[in-house]
Length: 131
Length: 155
Image 1 (cartoon, rainbow over the protein chains, first blue to last red):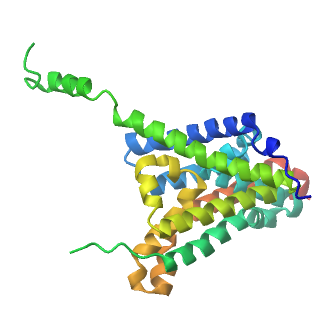
Image 2: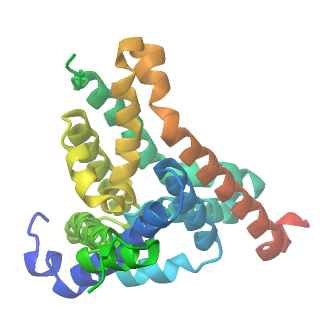
Image 3: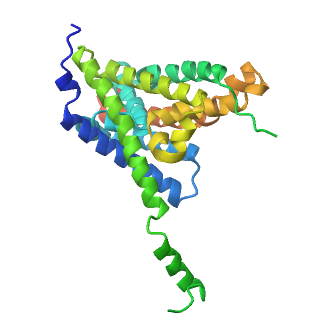
């Protein structure tokens, strides 16, 4: 069970596709930062919302199939994950699934962000500006 | 050659000629390779999970948890903002940026206390992300319900 095929883990083709797609998504974000007056917070919101819409339309799935983590690690992937979970929820439970499926699918990420976020803030030393 | 500072237009041309690396190209390049690298780390974790026989859903969750954990602690140690300054969107757009957006304001408002300061300000940026992400996904679900699964809705 613990025998890992490292050749498959470091499969150059999958890593290269992931690197390029992930990088291009970040370039889109960089262009938005440099060429528009959008704040980083709004760009994050736009990326998540866009990911949820493209995920709902089934378009983002193609990118995920092609690039793996290159498509799921950027925040558009978070939106895609929410939309995918919602659609699975709707298939299983109908209208209630629209409310439960998304957060269920993204639960690990949200919970980890809250938990690690709080712990990391506690142990951090706020940067004091020297007078 | 005329004085390059003579008029606004020639000055602009002069500036363009003198700064061959326009910042946006440099920024995009840095965003590309840092963002690509973070995604590639995710892909390596994903491939290891696959080798362990885990399904796609749980593997993706494990990738998110690990990347969020790492970037939360790097933010707490004041290292993430150094990467962010260089990489721009390269570290903002991946899920690492989400974790960073939680820890940064929480650190800043630590002096306001551990409940309302840290606990409340954590969601200054992450809150809107969750509000719009989750709301959009619910709308997606309702639209899907109406257009794709009529047999369930109409019965």
